[in-house]
Length: 344
Image 1: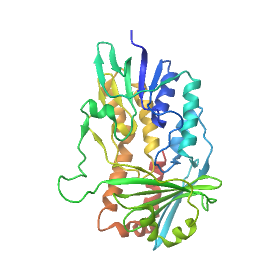
Image 2: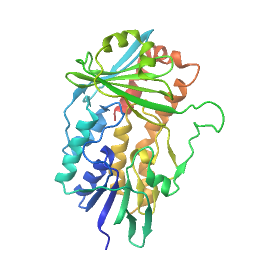
Image 3: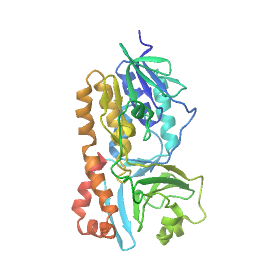
Image 4: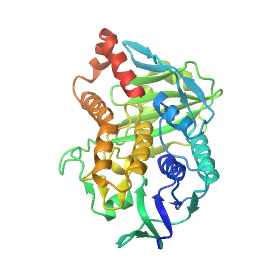
């Protein structure tokens, strides 16, 4: 007999969400995670309305700051759109992780310290780190060990064998000052995007998306108004992540499901990565016995994210980059439609 019904590899937000969903459906669950305590990482920390709705469905309601919409800004102007429905929320990654971890534990999910250095198929499922399970949900992030061990990695088309490195990376730093807006501001500097997310009454998160080697200070130097607001308010270290673009050859292999960033990732530019990851967690648990059904559900859950994000990343990396915000200003209905689509 296997030790558990569902083994979740990775105890981040998506892994814990998968554990919660599996427990709610009556499965025994073990979460395999090498890191102890609260886990932080570089991310924009903005929960879209759709992500917040999913969390509340699991009785998870982390504290944070209301987010009522998105603002694209450049030195030449800005365009705002406020969500037509319920607001989202800016939430510290550590706060979100604690809320999900507490809920998973309350539902009976067991967390075990360990690494998924090897994945072995068995007649009744899988074996990882000495734990046998009927099903494996790989929620172990951008650089998923499970994806690599099972040979499901596909080289990213963004990285050419020769020539400049066009891959994109993310950085995040907190600043101790009261939020001046309830919008997520996306500042388009010449070389990177800088996100401002209110996450507490006295704290904002500043995240950068751009090519390797560009620092937050580099990007802020081209955004003097924002730099002046933030001067002298740094609160905590810079955290990084990347390269962001990851591609998998498939998302389901026998009893294994790749979920969240482990299943493939385009970019954080649209800010809906967590919403998509949570939706994948729901789909993976609903299709434990049907790999083909999970593949279909995965494509459906990620379609808008992949299409819109890929288009924006392509535009951001082209000579037309300076025109993006002016075009959005001239087409507010189109900008609004894109934001509403991503809000979920």
